[in-house]
Length: 412
Ligand code: 3PG
Image (cartoon, rainbow, N blue to C red; front, side, top):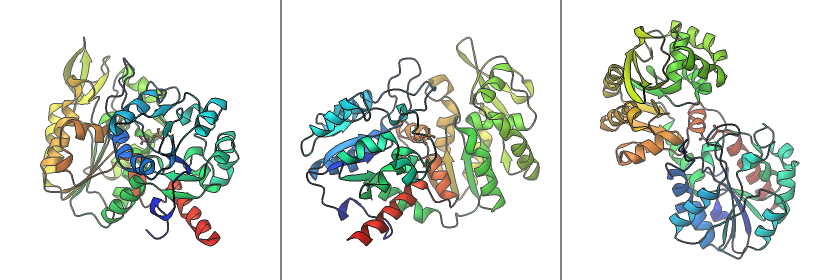
């Protein structure tokens, strides 16, 4: 990685260092507690620990959820979890760039760690922009003068040209953190021609990228099969003309997924044997799991998992694969009644001899919970960013680091 610089290229002792990590974790919708701390642990045990040990004054920037979603919560719990992981006190301030935040940053001693508030509390955070444009936001303008260095470690969010991902790179010396470094090295090797048959398993609730990915991997003959589960599965079924029932169709509308349906229909017609959709599903009826064949739809109950026959079909395809990419769970696995799809498909992936690449916050959490990590080829902290990387796209967060490195080399 000669085109970006790392934490080894700078002296960090006594330097106020903003580190952008990806702490975005699965959250229990009922009590708003963190269900799984894999990402916090990943950044904590590597980059943050290293920065603190090197004597930097560490200021952590991170997001959790998206505004308006149930998992959009403050980062207090994340800071507590980080303290537990590191076995040392971690400060937290419920402010991002106001007076309170700035006073806390100014009070830091060498080696101290401070977590600022969820960056997505800043209304302009998720606007797409260039590093230079974002450097002019009040967020960066208020914080950057207090800092000496920016460490970009959120590979999992590097596909977002958001303020906290790229804005600081225009105004501060900027280097990759340990997770960013590790992901770029490992995935760089993995993207070269996957062995055939190659299976892409797409699930989860963030179904807005599924069409783009499926088109790319099928049109470029990368994947031999695309298996759809989770909300992606619902969307693909709707694209086949299946009426899922009022609550489930309303969910697709609410998530603004309906506009993808015509494109998915076209893709399914083009690759009828390569695109696999669920043949049965599990709904929640009177708080219990009940399985329905797709031919029995529509249903007035919410769909929360793929059904047993689909699990069997998908597992058979997985068995014959030589390479597998899986991103996104097959259902609401946080609820044990609806964990079967995710659990059994992941077990099939773990049992296969294929090289498996696993991504997505929730998927990685499920892999950890099930104790399957050692049996997977490579487990990435990223979901959407991983997929965009696999599609050969330059991630804005990585591009910004390259530009910063050029500038820093030039200024030396
Ligand atoms: C992820 O979980 O994929 C990253 O944290 C990015 O989150 P986003 O899709 O809400 O931008």
